[in-house]
Image (cartoon, rainbow, N blue to C red; front, side, top):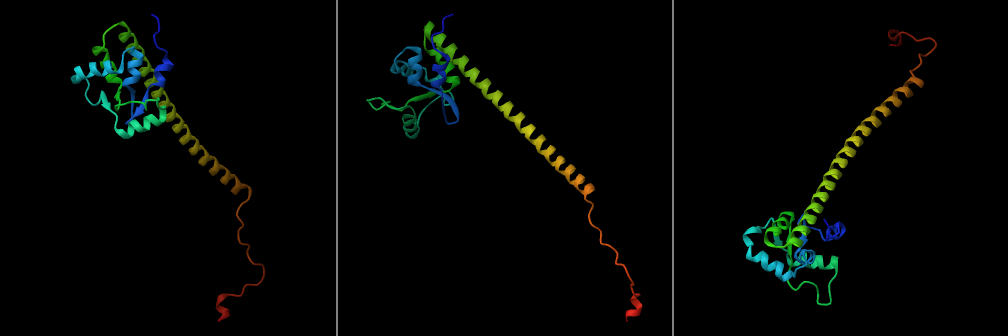
Length: 175
């Protein structure tokens, strides 16, 4: 099956907004080879399929911040605040957009999200293992330090006060 869209192209169009991985309407429209206006129209006609956890409109601040990150066109970028689609929203687009290209692009996007999620999980597992090893090494450092202290005490026993040599008068005689 021919690959319509490169994985790297998809990855570059995934943003983290509101602590979610999302893709913007204009980027999805470009991947699906439809106009952004047509994509939005199809979504509006099927609005029941896109609850807030599937799709949301960026706030003015988020749109301005995004515009600073990705640059603007001579027209000033988006005329309207863009929609952001979560992974579930992108999956739902396959039921709204028709055609072979839409299906193939959707498959490629879903595979990219799955791969990114796996990488994230692998990174979390690796971070947990590193933390475990760090804790273990800290414990080892403490034990080694205690061992060195014990060896030091054996090599240099603490100085005991030496008894005085000479005549010690009895305490009763001093009164």
